[in-house]
Amino acid sequence: DGGITQSPKYLFRKEGQNVTLSCEQNLNHDAMYWYRQDPGQGLRLIYYSQIVNDFQKGDIAEGYSVSREKKESFPLTVTSAQKNPTAFYLCASAIRDTLYEQYFGPGTRLTVT
Amino acid sequence: GENVEQHPSTLSVQEGDSAVIKCTYSDSASNYFPWYKQELGKGPQLIIDIRSNVGEKKDQRIAVTLNKTAKHFSLHITETQPEDSAVYFCAASNFNKFYFGSGTKLNVKP
Image (tube, rainbow over all chains, first blue to last red; front, side, top):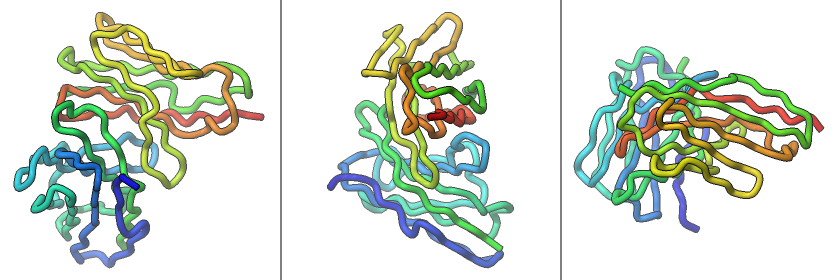
């Protein structure tokens, strides 16, 4: 089955620790995105990548880092510098030629205490 | 940057009634407007989209309208069913970035 997988579904960390969220896609999509979702709010863009080895900051990149070494993978690291990391994190991908239809993964709920 | 506003934040309808969700956007360069349905604890799923060169699009019980002059677009769901209950998000895109509304929680009462 083609799709986007995010693991794990639930993640718990202590404050001050870095944590990496996984995102893998087998849709052969060029572009990949990371969003953060907080209760009662829309999705806010953290980082996006349109091609391997290249990525751009979104609207709320502070305290986060990404890498894009492979087309299929776009891991997100939540660093200890992120002041309020507890949230639902969503990964998405899109075909680069259109960069229109985004497909989302199931999400990872990160809780930092 | 783009600013997308979505209303209402919650909507409760009786099964079989219609539901309408409205969004406005600020950037006239936005040219793609998707709608997503998100069920609890899951990622959003694309349910319908419209491009700026089209005024209306239908897919069975779902339709989207776009008014470029007024910079607003709407989602219409007819003959609502309990399984339509979810959070719906609108978005506006100017090719490489998407801006989302804050979501509408739709509750369809049986």
